[in-house]
Length: 353
Image (tube, rainbow, N blue to C red; front, side):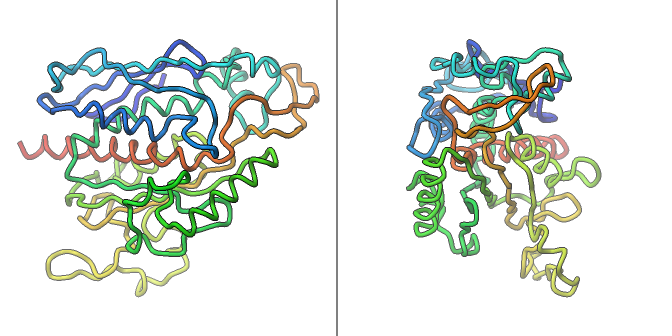
């Protein structure tokens, strides 16, 4: 259950990390959109493993194959089915933990909930699932091409970009392995991740997302608030531990006279501490939010744990893992943001027809 995401635009996904394939079905996608298949593959290439020395070295081409819903280069309005074959599984890397629970993984909770678990890379709980989201998000981006979505690495450990997003050149985000548009910060981040990797450890960080050209009116006033749906999407990503939009937690330190966004005559605001959303509905200003990722749980060091019999034991990480998941998470954040916005855009369109 609960393998679906979205309302009018809905993704249902399937597959495990070390199974034959992963994939999904996208329902509610309008007919007649000319699909840029190359652009979809480019988004997958941004997420795929093995693309630099600071990410997992699992070598997956992540080639998407569309099975239905697209004919002669255009969407037909029917279900869009797709599949991505797994080609580089090394399940033997996980033979050491068939009955051992890895600290901070889903092993223990899955086993207790279902009474069975796929120990090969975490099965359904693996971040490999996010490739499905990137496919759906890449299609959503083409549907709402008038909206610009830019995510980037804003911190690794205690290394932060010390500039507001308005001073950043997003065209530089893909110019380095860590996906940080600030060159000086990027070099420091890469050096930090390299150092952590050599020590057999991992490190966390944050991804910031800025969304421009959002029309006024996306989002619902009560339970489907735009920021609530964005938060739900981001908190569904593996390893995410926090989400804040607009002024976020810093706003809790301010007074109303400091925090209020004063209107201009054209309906824009002089400041944007609201983060482009008021009352759960987009107000036409930039939407911006930040997502916090914990350190990857698998480390190449000995750790105490327990086995399925409740006995204390020791585990040492093996296999191919990201020392820092943040750089590969950037396209995932963009994809889920696109799915949320496209869903609300479709909902608004049905009201104005």
